[in-house]
Length: 170
Image 1 (cartoon, rainbow, N blue to C red):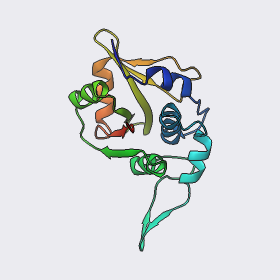
Image 2: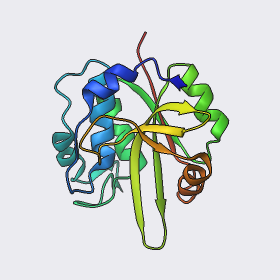
Image 3: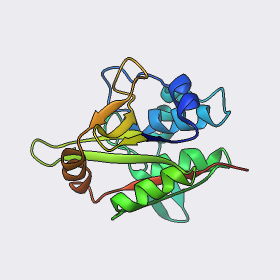
Image 4: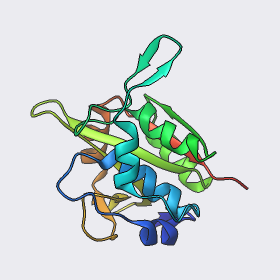
């Protein structure tokens, strides 16, 4: 099994989102707390994304209040903390595994279009038999949530294989 070097910190930083749609901000809080930002709280991150942000005269919708969080909203939360973060679509399995080995923290988005749902999780481990392991804010415990490779790739592909990468400061 391959795990992120931050595996224990991610487990200790786990926060349960309850029955909300706040998985994106909670994943950002888990990641930030694992990197030493002890005050990072998912609910506070969630509330900070609800207002529209402006870039000149253009509105930036980071989140649909009480609903979906956009990847650039999750990235913005971590950038505020001075963590170098970027998001991109169309990542590959190879990107995931290489970044895991390079100590880059990763948040992914999975989902379905019918019925419509999406979910953010923090990628933490890979095992040839078990598949992809995640720290999942929808779980009450910090235990890994495993997806078989075929199931994970199918769900990840539905939303364009979005990958949010957090580059820890060295």
